Length: 115
Image (cartoon, rainbow, N blue to C red; front, side, top):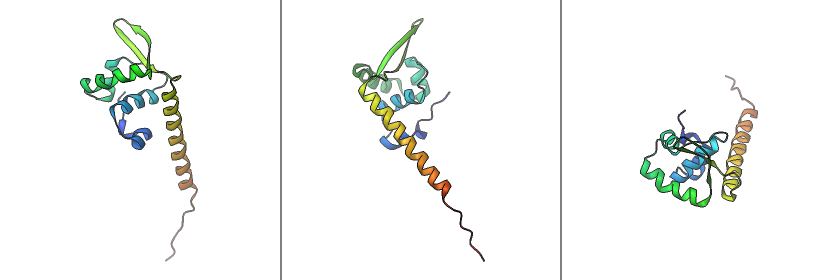
């Protein structure tokens, strides 16, 4: 599973900063938890960049530990975190708006030019 960062609405709207890329990765995979190595690999982000911003996400409480598998610690977004709740709402609003625009395009009548 390769994460396609440039295709998400949230990153198109807010920009592909490292913190948003990490957060968006979790938003797009809400049912799974991941190790740090899996996140770095999927985001194709440099380890130094990842760890620079990961520390802030941990301190803010945006990510939480879900379990440990051997020596790997697994993480997911804390959906009870106030900031995460707002990001989820924004992501949903962007998806809704995009869908509404697509429906409007679909509903437009097709005009045929006569010769």
